[in-house]
Picture 1 (cartoon, rainbow over the protein chains, first blue to last red):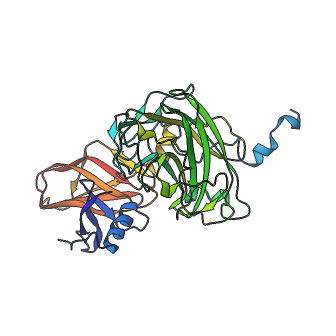
Picture 2: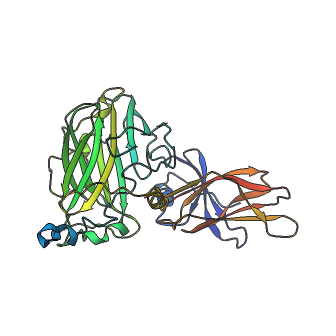
Picture 3: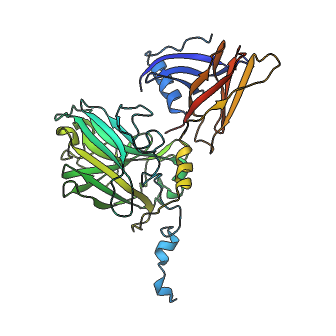
Length: 58
Length: 337
């Protein structure tokens, strides 16, 4: 999968991290913080490998 | 009825019970992503890397493949998943390959006792049709890709449906997960570079392999085709007739991993001045894990909109700072393995 952008996305009520808003294969997706989710696994793999940076939430 | 007429061995090993197929959508009846339309395979893409539901294509060479669920099948079936080579690659690099794979969730294989001395034998049945005759391989490997069993089969006649039955012994070693992660990968090789080739057949080996060196490279010739349907993987060393399900049952099984709906859903205001709008979408079935969500929005965007809560049973969307109307026209939840 081709991940070109990733940004933390907060819950608008609580202000806590809700998910990662990412552009994957050219499509905006909301990736949950779930270690069983394959997109989350791949995002964190690329972050650990220094290939991707997750931007701070707005 | 005389007791001798009853297949006691089959009864005790679940072979004549319903829900015996470990494969989901083996008759290719559900195609949520494409509904029969063709697409160019993009490796790893959630949409363009899947033919019929649960059957994923991985293409890592210079070849280009198109995938399509087509209305061409052997007697007793309506559909098959079809791959067509549109750009050839006759010389695969060491780590290049083309394959079709179904990852089986660990929660569905706990009864197999793999990784123990009680590991159960499975029987794989499928129908295959290809323009390229010759030697092919299927394999099973575990989540960590450190245990593999390779099995060969031959396509004898070009462009003719052939039924294959393959015995898969259970692995008494290794780790085969029984969680919501992948328990078993079932894979059909369509061409494999040297890194993933092995001469060891019919016995488990450490490591990850996809074929022997004599595996056909489907992509060696432009316009080559390969089709698959009627896939059944069941406990025991006997192949039973394909277990046809009603469409609702198969669809619900698929929706544990992928859910797509294209119809208008309003995101309603929750305060007096319409500044905050929220929409809750309940999934048809509880999904394997919290899914990645894609929303196709309609209406005007407000000051912000997105997804603010996701669980295995629902997703909550939001539109803030919007006094007009807000809705989405499509939503996808992806919890594929």
